[in-house]
Amino acid sequence: MSDTGLDATFIVGLHGVLDKHPWIEHVNAEFDLEEDVFSLAVQRASAFAWSSTALTGEQAENLWDHNDAGGDWTPDGAVRQLAWLQSSLPRHARMPGRARREPRLPILPVFTVLADALRRVGAVRLTGTHTLAPLHRAGDARLALAENADWYTLANPADATTLTVTVSALPSARLAERADEIREAALARTYGNMRVATRKPATAAATPGLARPLAGMVQAERLRLALAFRCDVREWTTDVAAWTTEVFADSIRAVTGLSGLVLIAVSSDPAAA
Image (cartoon, rainbow, N blue to C red; front, side, top):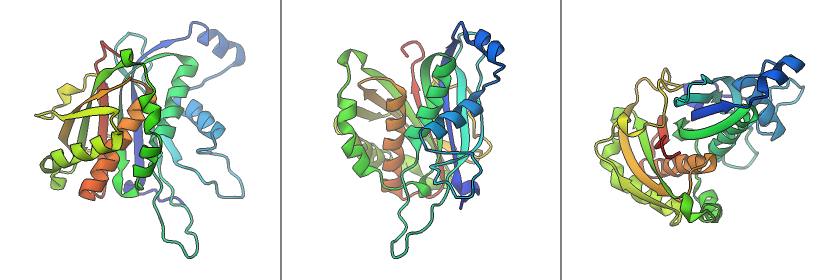
């Protein structure tokens, strides 16, 4: 059974520059293809068995249910919102005799599906990501972050770079008052693989790797920019963007107990990405 209300909304966007493969239009014409972000994302999610649109007699255990998707592939060399996916998070059946434990948000799976879809049609230079996340549907990620810490240690030191992370939430959440606690929680969850410093003031100008308007602004219309952090990481990849997003989502969840949607954006300097 899927909970399709606002509180189940999960939206992800990848930003950057896409250079289409020189052969793509020839192949499209030869095989009469009309692939777009939505069709490619559906195919890739199904291949990983993460989400399916197939109509069968049995309920699929999807990590997410596809609602809509799109992207701007304008070939002008400018940073564009290359791919976005709007989905809803299903509530899985209760196990008799067991308390419900919310699963982790499928941040890396959705990032991976969108990145794979883009790389199927061209070369991608990622400059930023944004995620509209329902924190009250997010399970505790601390154990998973600990188990995967060494993955992010194993990186070429020459690829080290700096990211900006911003967080928007309802003004009533008063996140700015908890900035130092959230920073400490994020540091603890990165196991030495990220340096985190608070940036003040928090402004959208600090995120040049994002193309606006961001997908999900209708759902996020009441959210206001509250926090900004400077994050030094060992490399810049789709994996790192997803990891960074989950680190801050889990930190905010743990520190504040916040219930509702938050918008977490991760931005790299487009000139360095």
